[in-house]
Amino acid sequence: MRLSRAFIPTLKENPVDAKIVSHRLMLRAGLIRQHAAGIYNWLPIGTEVLKNISSIVREEQDSTGAQEIIMPTVQSAELWKESGRYNDYGPEMLRIQDRQDRDMLYGPTHEEVVTDIFRNNIRSYKDLPINLYQIHWKFRDEIRPRFGVMRGREFLMKDAYSFDLTYDDACHSYNKMFISYLRIFKRLGLKAIPMIADSGPIGGSLSHEFIVMAATGESKVYCDRELLSKEIEPHIDYDSNLQDAVDDWTKYYAVTEDKYSSEDSNIKSKDIISANGIEVGHIFHFGHKYSKPLNASIKGTNGKDIFPFMGSYGIGVSRLVAAIIEANNDEKGIIWPEIVAPYKIGLISLKVGDLEVDNLVESLYQKINSKGYSVLYDDREERAGVKFSDMDLIGIPWQIIIGPKGIKEGYLELKSRKTNQLFQVRLDNIEQSLLQYVSP
RNA sequence: CGGGGCGUAGCGCAGUCUGGUAGCGCACCUGGUUUGGGACCAGGGGGUCGGUGGUUCGAAUCCACUCGCCCCGACCA
Figure 1 (cartoon, protein in one colour):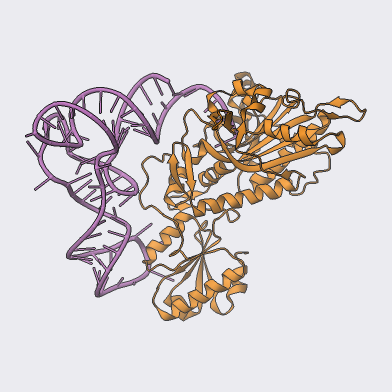
Figure 2: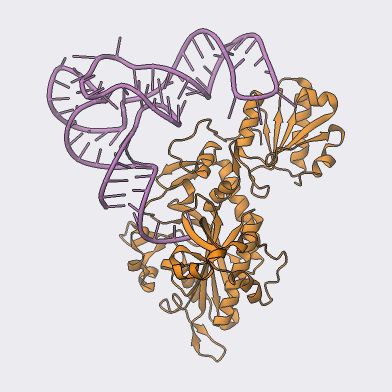
C-alpha cells in the first residue's frame, strides 16, 4: 500500500479525551475514531489488526475441532424470556422493538441463540461433542464505557459454545478451550494468566479469566509469582487427556478480586503478588443452565432424553488490540508484534524526485509486494523526519530506508522498530538478505 | 445512576467573569526555497461558537430548557 493513497489519518497531538496509552495511540496512529460513547469506527489499519488477531483465534479454535458459524446480532427476545434472562440481564442489554412492536435485543451474548440452533438440529448423543463459535460484534450498554475500545459498549468478540453428553466430556471441552486460549495469547505475544473467576450473569460453577498484567488494567488480581514466568507446552494433542496440562496451570494460586479472601493471602502471602490486569478471555462451564429451560434435549445412549452439558468461552478480540498496545509501546508509538502488525514492512523513500532513488524504491516495492510481504510504502513528498515518526507511531515492525547515500554504497537499511537495530542489506541480493531478518 | 467537568475550524486551545466586527498554534491549499529524525518564507481556504427558546438596539458571552462527550464511584470480553 502506498501511503499517499492510504487512509491512515495520524495525529501529531494527543487527543485530550484519551487517558490511557492504548487509546491515545489508537487514535493517533489512525486505527479508530469514536462514533459515540463506547462505540468506534475501525479505520483501515485498525481493521487490518482485527483481521490478523481474528485469524490467529480462528486457526487455534479450528484446531480444537470447534466450528465457525455466524449468529444474528439482533435477536428475538422470545428466547431470552424462555431462559429467564430477559428479566435477569438488566439495563446492560440494549432492548429494541421492530416495526411490529415485537421485543428484540442487540445480542450481548449468544447462549440462548446457540442453544436454539442446537435444539432445532441435534437429536442424538452421537452428534456430540460439538463446539460452535463465532467472531462478531456484541453490544453491552455498559454503565460507564471508557478507555477507548478497552471497555467499549460495542466490541468484537470470539464466543464459543460447547455441548457434551457427560460432565467428564464437558470438562474435556473446557480443558481444550483452556489450552487453546493459552496458545492464542502466546501467539499474540501476550502473557495471559488463567485465574479462578466469578461467572457473573453467564452463570455456572467453573470459570477462569485470562488476565494480561498491565498497570492500566481494570481488574484487580492476585496470583503466585511463579505464574509470571511460566511457559506453555509447545505441542498439544487435543484428543489426549488434557487434565494434567490444565492442572499444571491451575495448581498455582491465581484469583480475581471477587474470588479473593484475605485468608488466602495469609496462607501464602510471600508468594502472592497483587496487580492490575486486563481481562482478555473468560471461560465458563455451566452444565444445564440453558439446555434445560430451553428444552434442548437429545437422545442418550439408553434411548432416554438427556440434556447436554454446556460451556461458553469468550475472547475480547477488539479489547486485545488495546491490550497488545498496552504491552507494546514506547514514547514514539506502537510496537506491533509481527504477527498482528497491519503491515510487516514500512518502505521509506528519503528523496522523492531523485530519479535513482525513485526507480530503486519503486522496483523494490513491486518486488517485495509480489513476494507476499505486506508493505506500507511511504511515497509522500515529506521530509525524512515526518516519515520516520509516522512509521514509528504506526508501529510497523521493520523499516526499509532508502536514500541516495545508501544507494551509492550499495546498501539499504533495515531497521527494527522494537530494538532500534539497523541492519545493512546489500542491494544486489535484496530478497535473500531480507529473508535473513523478516519472513513474508 | 450519584458526584465533578467540558462542548468555539480536522486536532489542541484562548475569548465567556465585565454583551459591541470570532482569534491563536498545528493540520490543510497555492507558490518559492529546502530535504538522513516532525523545515522556512509569502499568500490562502475553512466557523449557523452543540441545539432550541428567551432577555437585549446588539449574545460565543446573560437566563431557561435540551442534546452530546469526558472524569471519579458501583457492573463486564
